[in-house]
Length: 186
Image (cartoon, rainbow, N blue to C red; front, side, top):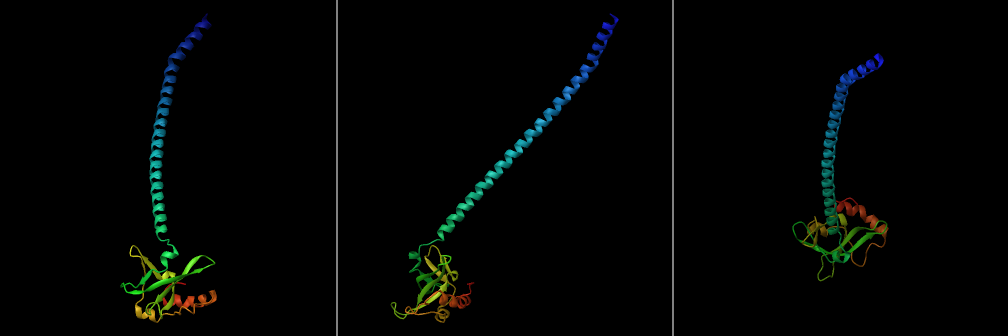
């Protein structure tokens, strides 16, 4: 019986001393768990805020891209709208009108606008191959601007309507000279 009493005493004493220690350990672990849960909630809130920021940034980028696409579409024009368009200089003087477009078949780019200038009622007009880069569209006024005065244009390299450059080699020969004359990179 002494052994049973000793075992009971040891068990009772263990429960009395270990119980509170175990309870304190449970309290500490519970407190740690609550702190970790609070950290997790804070991190989740930060992630939500970042997602909102990223969504807003993506929305702004999408709007910018749509605006750029719209602007780009406004810069695209049918050749039938370009042919016949007036060409004026920066002071508003009429320099002529676009008669035709010269396209590079290897890349599909417009290389030159052929502008008619001078003459009376279409007679005696001189044609000029003006590098496309030298012309600037003026919306909504519906004409192109060439930064040259009339006297300078009269001295520009040109040709008459019966003697167009016959092939791409002839156009290429003129390319450097025209680029220098109109101050654009060929």
